[in-house]
Image (cartoon, rainbow, N blue to C red):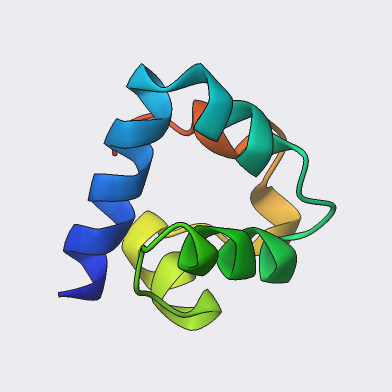
Length: 69
């Protein structure tokens, strides 16, 4: 279920510029997950990493620009 939540979040971020801007303002992934949870997306930091297959060190783009989600 958590992977579906991550996918749902990224699809929403692609179509909602306000959500995308909000998420992109997160200073780190833990805050990003907290912001996503506040917007009704139910997944943890670890679940986000597992669903995206990315380690924090690999993240070199805005969070809403991750391809393949």
